[in-house]
Length: 117
Image 1 (cartoon, helix red, strand yellow):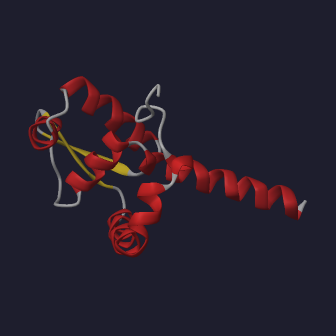
Image 2 (cartoon, rainbow, N blue to C red; image 1 turned 90 degrees about the horizontal axis):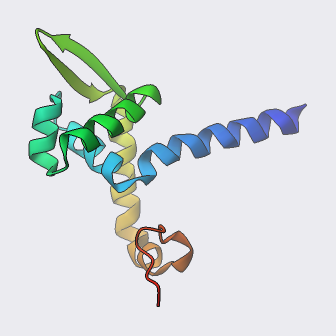
C-alpha cells in the first residue's frame, strides 16, 4: 500500500513539472511573475499568438498553476500561489550552478529541438 501511495505521489509530482516543461507555458509563467495580466497583455509581452496563449493558459489554469479573476469584460491571469514564483526563482538559482550540464545533456532535448542529423 505504501509503495502505491509513493508511486502516485511521484506521478503527481511529474505532472506538476510537466506544467513547467513546455517553453511556451514557462514563458507565460515567467511573464505572470510581474503581476496580473490579460491575455492581450501576455500576447504583447511574449510575442505568442492569442490562440496559443489562450490554449496554454487554459492548461495552466486547469492544472492549478494559474488563477483568474473577471474584471469587467476582461479576465486577469495571475500565478495561483506565490510558491509558483518561488519555484521559478529556485530554478534560476539552481540553473546558475548546473546550466552547462543541463545544456549539454542529450537526454533532455525536447523532440522539437532535435535535428534529423
